[in-house]
Image (cartoon, helix red, strand yellow):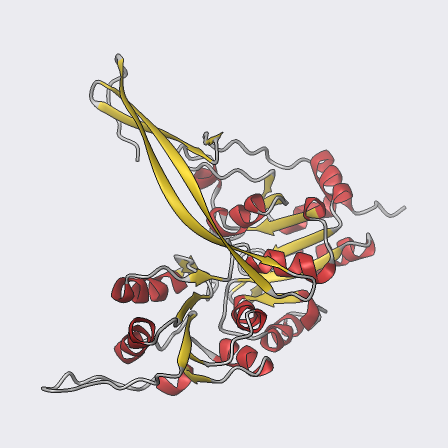
Amino acid sequence: MRARGRENATLPLGDSTTTIQKTTMSFTASNKVVLTTTQKTTQKTTTTKIGVRRMTSTRGGRHVARANAPKMSPPDAKSLVDATETFIFDCDGVIWKGDSLIEGVPETLDLLRSMGKRLIFVTNNSTKSRAGYTSKFKSLGLNVGAEEIFSSSFAAAAYLESIGFKKKAYVVGETGILEELDNVGVQHIGGEADAGKQVTLKSGELMHHDEDVGAVIVGFDRNINYYKIQYATLCIRENPGCLFIATNTDAVTHLTDAQEWAGNGSMVGAIKGSTKQEPIVVGKPAAFMLDYIANKYSLRKDQICMVGDRLDTDILFGKDGGLRTMLVLSGVTTEETLKSPENDIAPDFYTDKLADLLCLKPVEA
């Protein structure tokens, strides 16, 4: 939090510490999840200047300073590509906006493939399955295979499969999640089947729920309603051990190329509010998808570059995972936001759009 005021004498107010319990996931050789609970102590040192209260913090013993990222030059682009074996791309805002392909993307992907780079596409949008995204890539003229696509709908199903989940899942979400659950043999209810259901709240009304539901998955849902919120709430609060899984907590998303739309964070927030529980997040910036991908392909994380348009999901996903990072300004984040004093997430480089990597294309004689 930052207040503004006159610059005068500094008066120390003291230190405080906060202990946070965090559960992390790791993988065995067969892609089974191992859960580990750790505690992290965050120290905050607060000082004040007359009329001003300022706060600085340490994260894991590391001082957090204002982000300072260089704009990528052609030499920077060469050194980044030379050091990278695998590129992970966000989709919305990097590859496309809504249903419109961003200029220069096909040529850039072709260039990177010709240089022997592995390309992986990761999206927090759970409305489609990998099969659905394969069709979208094809409709935009891009040759991308299902094995190169990792959506948050796939991540939700992969997480349940990795823990040996045998119960039913209740879904707040769309077709993508349902199709991926079918692919791993997880029974499910809810989703689009509950789109038109209403609650009248007449005297004595009681909603019954399935006591065999062992997980509630909350993904983006254009047809979210009070019935779904209540059903999910009952499962999480009343079914012993019921998991609360969020595909992502994005505040906004590019569902069309005309504007930003309220994202899955708004749906997840409703369930958090009614259950007073924090979800297991399987999409960016949580580590699950990165660990799954790195384990599946035996990748070294220091040879991966994450390319995205969001600081708090894509770039944080990369930084927390030990990856190189490149921010593109073709989506959500503006240069003003990147350079704001309030921002402390710095990519290794930033550039206007993915096609800026075409500066590496050999000049034809």
